[in-house]
Amino acid sequence: MSEFKLPDLGEGIHEADLVKWHTKVGDEIKEDAPLVDVETDKALVTIPSPFAGRVNKLLGEVGDKIKVGDLLVIIESGGSEQKSATVASPVTTVATLATPATRKMARELGIDINLVKGSGPAGRVTNDDLLLYQQLPKTADEPKKIHPASPIPSPIPSPSPIPTSTPFSIPFFAIDALPDFTSFGHIERVPLRSIRRTIAKKMVQSNLIAPQVAHMDDADITALNALRSSQEKKSVSVLSFIIKASLVALKKFPSFNASIDAKSEELILKKYYNIGIAVNTERGLIVPVLKGADHLSLLQISKGIAELAAHARAADLNLATLQGSSFTITNIGAIGGSYAVPLLNYPDVAILALGKAQEKVVVREGAMVIRTILPLTLTFDHRVVDGADAAHFMSEVVKLLSDPHKLFWEM
Image (cartoon, one colour):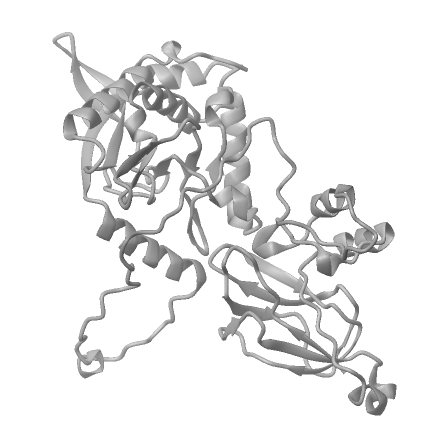
């Protein structure tokens, strides 16, 4: 009889929500076949079966919260014909996440996959982790071990995330005495799970720690749209131009590309430019990070945004892709609405919100004309920058978007 417990999911994750069983009691299951879907506050993960055999018991219902180390399933590894023999067999536990293809690769390379620390979603071992592990030197009298694997390095290294610890604890929610809502009518209680719970905690943390102020302005993007309508540039999104303009402003006003260390009373000026892109998904708001954006052309930025958004909606982002932002952009205009005041993506000190671009009648050189106007809102940490700084920053962005030919074009 073989037991399988929820493995260590990495990144300090201690629990997950059970989303879906891919099997039921009595089924025969193959090794590496999909067993169960679990969702953490970082990713949705399909865990494969570590054994082949008949499913004897499933522990947990859909919606249950499962802690790392909790028993998930018991499998009769010898099948129904050997049931009595397998009951007396030693209990085995496997605690490594990997796809069937990666498990096969590990067997072909002669690597014990249980010794490999994964860099994929929720600590999943990837093919790159196996190749990195294979290259590490081993001694004859030393068990094979590996340090936490990193994704294959890109031309732009990913910096370590800024610690978010504070000198006081951050409550999830302020505990308030609520009225008995059932006295007013029918209600339904829906547990906050995974990402929604994490978003709630981060928003409380952001609002509690940083005094936040918003500055609003409008950008005339008529010329930008005309530039994009040309054949060679139409594949580049408006958001790419906004990121490029923001990068110019961030280099001119470095205090917006920073974090504050309240404990040491120091301002951390970041010399890298990693742009967080807020993506609306079925699981909640995800903020993947476009690393080293200042080294990318407009076309590369546009492709990078599209890839990050696709992976976010498919819930298959690498955990490292969700870390290390230095400035964040959120686009409510894609859904609708002119202005919004977003909370900071803490510990970033600034976030730019885009509204819906619309044609409006404006006055230019004493004449009324129709122009395409993009509403912008910059939320900033008032501990770090003042209102005048925000006005200068926003004026730079507006100027560049209004005359996009000033932005350096690289295909």
